[in-house]
Every structure is written in C-alpha cells, then in structure tokens.
Image 1 (tube, rainbow, N blue to C red):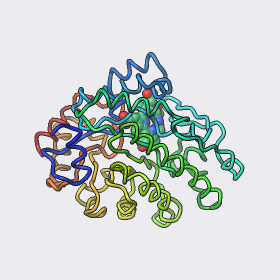
Image 2: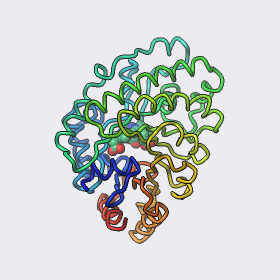
Image 3: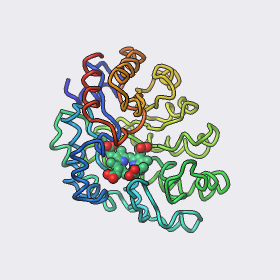
Image 4: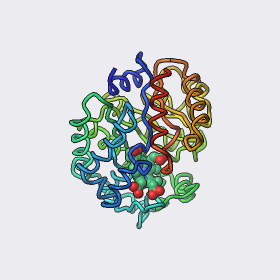
Length: 341
Ligand code: CP3
C-alpha cells in the first residue's frame, strides 16, 4: 500500500498492510530545513504564500516517511473570514489586539467566504496535492469554534482562558452568537479545503480539556456536530483534543470519522470509551520522544500492543511534536511502527 491508501483505509476502519503514522506539528521547528526557511521569512509569510507553505508541508514527508502530510497553516487563519486581525507572536502564540467581549463585537464580525478570505490556503493545498501523488494522504485542518473562541475572547494564550469561560458561563446569548459565526466559517473553510484536494480534515479543539461534560454538551457539542454533519459526508474527519478522557464518549458520537486521543488514557481504554464506531489516532506522549531510544521504543510498542491490530488505528503523538525533538528519532518511530504492525 502507498501511504495515502494506507491512511485512508485506516481512518475508514478497513484493513491495512501496516499501521499508518504521521505527527502533529511535523512541519515545524523540529526540522532544520524549516528553521532555515523561517530565518528568511516570518511565520505569516510562509503560511500565506502557497509555494512556501507547500514546501514546508512537504519537508517532513520524505524525511520522516510518514503516511500523511498536514498542510502548513495555522488554526488562526480563518479569522480573516471574520475580519479579525491577529498576530502569531514567536514563543507566545496567537495574539488579538481587540478581543471579542460584547454583543456589538460579535455583530461586527464579517462572514467572508474562505475562497476570498484565505485563497492562499486552497492554493497551497493544490500545490501540495500535485507534488504528493499517492505517497501520503493530504490533511487539511481548522481550529474548532470553542478553541478559536478562547483566543478571540481572551486575546492571547492563557492557562485556563478565564475570560472566555466566564463569558461562556455568564453571557449565553453572546457566546452562542459567536459560536454560530465560527461554525459557519469553519464549515465553509473545511469544505473548500476538501474541494482543493484535502483527503481528510482534522478539527483542532485544543482547549476542550478545560470543560466539564455538562458545559461541553450545552455550549460546544451542538456546533461540533453541525460541523461534522456538514463535512464528514465529503471526506473523513478527525476530532482532536487533549485532556478529554471524561468527554470521549460524546466526542466519538459527534459525527467525526476518527478521534485523536492523548496519553492520559492508555490507547485501549480510550478506544473502549470512544466505542467501535470510530477510528482512533494517537497516542504517544510527545515528551517521551525526548527520552533515550529504549524508552521511546517501549512506548511505541505499548501503543501498538494496545491497538492489537484492530482496524482503525492511526499512529500519532497525543499532541504536537516538541520543537526540541530530534527528527531522526521520529523517522525511527515511523520505521518501527511500519515494521511491527
Ligand atoms: O505541522 C503541522 O502540524 C501543520 C501546521 C500547524 C501549525 N499550527 C503551524 C505552526 C498546525 C496544525 C497548527 C495548529 C495550531 N496552531 C494549534 C492546534 C494544535 C495544538 O497544538 O493544540 C494551535 C493551538 C495553534 C496556535 C499556535 N500557533 C501556537 C500555540 C503557536 C506556537 C507559538 C510559539 O512560537 O511557540 C503557533 C505558531 C505556529 N503554528 C508554529 C507552527 C510551525 C511555530 C511558529 C514558528 O515557526 O515560529
């Protein structure tokens, strides 16, 4: 099997010749060639230039031997559809000078089509697609409404996103109006990515682990369901979150094709929670990859043992690669996964 076919079979819970593997944040600072690119261009220049974004997307594919390429972009890019300026501050993350805090702020948000607001994302996908062939599946992605709302309301990264959560708890009308707009923009953005050649798309709900199950069901899940209802019929979808062991059953029932899980539950326990109707992606701890090889190797073998050859496992980390990771170790993990499963 070629990588693309292997990934697509696994996400659809069909038989594979060996377990497909890719890494979140594989196109990033752990690669010397990416760091060299970033010395010449700032982050937003790379993300908004289709040829540079395509080059960054392709960097890890041959070097690591992964079965999927994830588009070089950022969860913040669709804020262009809402007319919200933002900055990606090195070492900090997304920063928004004028956060969304009132009903008037939400009403002012525009709803530009992705094709007009972020044409460079679709162009980058087309460039990658034409170069990638069957070597690897091409993955698009978007930030989920809850995670984008956290940044939009807080204005910057935070440990607990207290302002965002307080607005969600205390100002339901504003919260739901904001989530409506984010849902609309996210559906359009993901559909356009599929039209442009994405084989599957991942929805990053990075901060979902901050929520209790009742708030999740009331304030977030209805929007997640709408996104997957609109997108999963067009291409396989992956739901990503961390620290959500208490939400996995609801997440698995949200209409996604696969659930990405972190290391806080062993893979078999997470899959039992999620149930047999979804594929599972994960779940090595990114910090473990910094340890000496024998520890990495036993971690990889443990994940594979817990997947026990069931159809529907996509090997990945439980969260993004840490910048200090040695790419040679990542390539070795890929060889081990492909050789052992
Ligand atoms: O390789 C890939 O996974 C594809 C590209 C990708 C990036 N960001 C590139 C990037 C993806 C999938 C993302 C998603 C993203 N961005 C998330 C969700 C995933 C997660 O980790 O939970 C989030 C929360 C963001 C927001 C964001 N953008 C952060 C926190 C940062 C890091 C800031 C820093 O300097 O520490 C960014 C910037 C960013 N996005 C980088 C990369 C490679 C590093 C920026 C650089 O090159 O200087």
